[in-house]
Amino acid sequence: MDMQNLSRRRFLLASGATVSLGALISACGGGSKSGIARVGLAPDPATLPTAEVTDVTLLRTATSLEYNAIFVYEAAKDAGYLSGDAAKLAARFQADHKEHAAATASLTEAAGGKAFNDPNPRLQSIYVEPALGLIAESDDPAGDVLALAYALETLAGATYQFYVPMLREKELRGAAMGIGAQEARHAATLGSVLNPSRLVSSHGLAVDAKWREEGDASLFYAVPSAFGTLAPVQVTLGPADSRTTVNLETPSLNSMVYEYLDGE
Amino acid sequence: MTTMPPRRPTPADIELLAFAQQAELAARDLFAAAADNGVGGEHTASVACIAAHHDAASQAISALIGRSAPQARLDSLFVASRNAFLNDDSFATSAWELENTMVATHLSLLSALDGTEGSALVASIVSAEARHAAALAVIAGLSPVSDADAFLTTPADIVALTPEA
Image 1: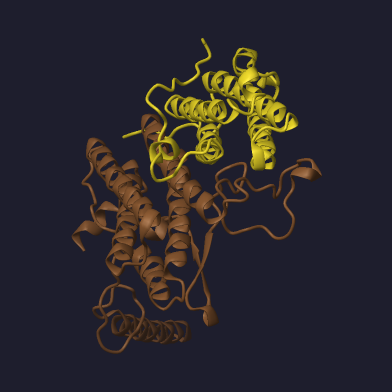
Image 2: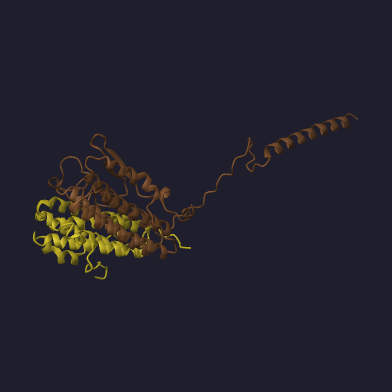
């Protein structure tokens, strides 16, 4: 008898616990998929698309960078910052960038992608627009435009260099670096104009003391190093009393022009 | 679906990179001889630094391919250009042609190499040697405005070196 009563009591207790637990789970569940209790309604988190870095992504990003350069030279021309030989040089470089953009757009389509024919939006907002704003306030806008051009051309060359081992089709590597080589030549030409007395830096080289430079390294050389580097490119711009250094970096994962972005 | 390229140089890559090292060593010796001879006018120090750049390139290739690196210059290239490099009148033009040839050679390698480490290294060498060509156009007395192509492009008659040459 006692055994029966005990069993019954235990059964009732167990039933009560089951009902209570069920009610709690039910209350918490509601319409929520996460199972976490909350007050009110919240939108489901967006699912980010898988952003694979393909040859097409790299080529579209390279094209976008060409349009950033085209934009800068156009802005400098419209503002009348450059004149004489500097203006002629800038016009030639801009024409080269238009050819590069057409070439990378064509390679994009040949690789089965859709060409992207606009400036890289992220680089435009974090580098180009702030730099042009500083130049607008500069005491030496012509000098600053050439400095920015040197930095941008160096960045463009570094970008192609950076992308070479990321390209899966090896035929594309030679084509891409052929363009990158011309960007490097643009930078070298500007370096020779900005620092004509010393074309090749000796910094970091094991050369005889008589070939070494005295003093600090310049920001500008036709040839600054033995290899093309992927380090950030620094450029200092703006009015004399508040010069600002901008660090330009090659377009990486957060500034590539993925195809899925076309719909946004 | 495109397969991922290999990281390390393949046996075929190693042959190409070994050839590139020989070309770099020939260029190093040519620029070093020119600097020792005092050519380049006010830019002799830059000529010496270009020699050091080619030496660095050869060492980097050696580090990548190890004991397969020949460690010997491409003597045919050295002999063909040596006299021009020792003469102040012919140095800059010959050196400019050599750098354009090196750029063309490395670009052709980039379309042939399978491994990504080799292609990354060669791309970084192209970046520097394309700049060398522009610097040598300055030393040759050319104008970046009226002679812009000499600074910015590889002439159409420049032929890439090949291991068979």
